[in-house]
Image (cartoon, rainbow, N blue to C red; front, side, top):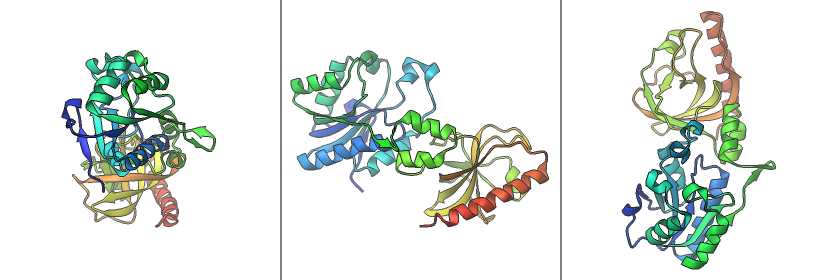
Length: 315
């Protein structure tokens, strides 16, 4: 894998780093649209002998500008860095979106970040890219500034899947409806949640279906409450799993979480390990059952269905 530099502030970037081909954006989700930007950056860097870089932010700008409108991120910081590195990018600059950054004008952002910090020779953005105080900067202004500062601008068109524009809002909408298969077509990979397995109430174990409860600090947006077929990755192994998102209010109301039952295995000790689950297919929405026996029968039926789905998903 490529050498990969990460910085969390502009003053951490070495003065001799570059010249660069830079792509800028929120990169929430690393969907096919984001991947298109990075592909252009990587290819242009290879052709020009420059280094490819992504500039993003430590939080969504709405966290500062309009917290009431803020939605949970699709992926966490570690997931984002891993995916950006896997795309072949050489460096990631994650700027803290604080008051001082929000007050930079579009021109100041170009001069201070793109030109002075990154020594950008080529800049790659999407058609709806906005930057600078109040979102006043756009690709048209960036084109004007590129002529002044001597860099080339690439504006990458949107990516369409089945005639629909790929966007973070569309990915979130599909996750909120449980349509993880559609999400996979928008991401070019399956959606994942990664986190540490923590001790829970052991309710699944009491029912004969032990589950790995993932911590609420896990990265990766939780889809619609319900049951999913999926894979659980731990210590380099992949296990078929029944994934449950939501609360268990048949037995006892618990905070919303994701728990995974590895099919046909009761001997795994996953506590305190970081695991990743991958959502393959939606099975059913959450249901409150009339009693324990009904719940156990439903879980067994889910597992049987999931087993059949995953048997056809083997590599």
